Image 1 (cartoon, helix red, strand yellow):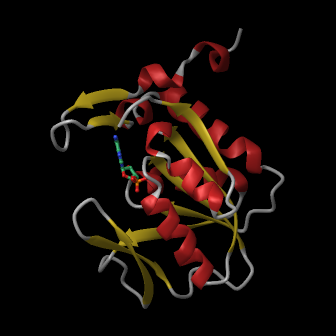
Image 2 (cartoon, rainbow, N blue to C red):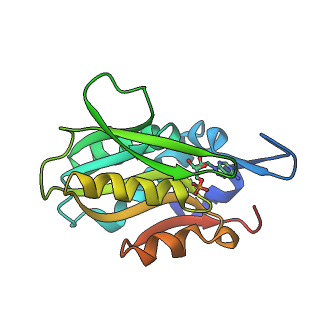
Length: 181
Ligand code: AMP
């Protein structure tokens, strides 16, 4: 039996009730990232479906998508592109807004980060309502990227994010599910 078989990644995720506000169960992956076997297996499992997908770049969503996205890009032998909150990128950027519970937010990407037709894999730690991921797909479309897939460590299926992103024609790959919000 290998370590691969015995480590349950879900056991390495810490759940924090009422963070950042009442009623939210925050799924904290810092405990997973801090475990050597957990991190390695997590990156391997995120990468596995895309080994032969001719990925040109991995786009990671701020902030936990940077940690995982960088590692996945290294494994796939391609570059990494950050998608950041508005005003954080140093060069010319294009943006996409998306709705939050109260108000709107904007994510941005450097306008020269992806070349026309490049094949991009999107990575984030968790998909909840799918609002962030949908905005990222739209942002990448503005640069004429071909989004080959979207991979997340955690899916909260009750919030419908995966279905929302798959409605856009983007296949999602997730490593575990938690019920509820
Ligand atoms: P959404 O746009 O609703 O799919 O939310 C996804 C983003 O919010 C991801 O970048 C997550 O890191 C963060 N997020 C949303 N809900 C949670 C949760 N319950 N625990 C941890 N992170 C969350």
